[in-house]
Image (cartoon, rainbow over all chains, first blue to last red):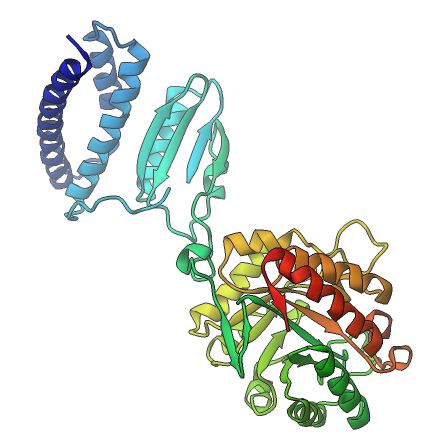
Length: 99
Length: 339
């Protein structure tokens, strides 16, 4: 296989990733709404750690455990953000907010 | 806002900080580095006090990313601000505009003589004070409204604009009849009441940097005026207090390029107050033009040895004309010109 073959393969995988990430985000939004009804806090460090350990446990490489952890940190960050928006009933705006 | 955790911060300590960020209403971007965890807080508003986070356990450093000023920032107006006074005189454009005149209006003869001398040498604006913020209450306090009238008459006779210092909001209405630009002195840079009042007029305001003010504080003061609706603000670097007391102040030349990057407002330099000594004014004026200043504020007196205030830093007409001829040569080297 040459570069463009591998790239096509990556493109197919990326497409699935986007679908899966959105499915995951949908779960986060539902959880956000339920949390709001029950008056639970958004930030649940134990659950976040659980997600990270699961990811490390499921990791068969070639990515290192550290790399998997860092990628999932971003996924968790966005899930937390989506939950927060769902809780406050805000329409998700693309971040123009500054750090 | 970016929070850098200490090396070896525990999970609980990191979680506590994340908890506080979320509780403050911001989103978190967590990044585990090789030795430090870095937390980015997203959506932090301008007036948030980041020091609250510096105090949390295991926090090494907190870096504020958004600038506290907005209307004054270069991002707000990338093309820069040009203040058009009329008759072709524009501050912030390609021309380096020179304001010159005595520290105070002392008499009709004095102000006429100086007006004639500075206009002939190429100054476009006359500076002079009628209300003087003297350090000592026993020193000459200025001629008051009469002085403003004399200054206006002299300026009109020689085709100059007028800038003079306003000390209090109650003077604004009266002074509007005489001045083209209101000057806020260094000691009034944080007189927020005065700044707000000037934010409601439309005449340009020349805002001088306080003698112990940081550049950020200067820009925040300008923000007071801008946020009131008056976008005609000109900044002025006039020397700051440093540990070096050989000269009256230390003229912070570097402030000129720094401010031009941070802000769109024009910046002038005052080498007279910046040095306090006549024999140093020329060198600093030339340096300021070379550094890219949009203009200069220079004290000129027809008889400096007998001036009622700040004579030691005033140039006489011959010295001023000489200086003008020098900066006429320097300005083109930095892509500007002098009248």
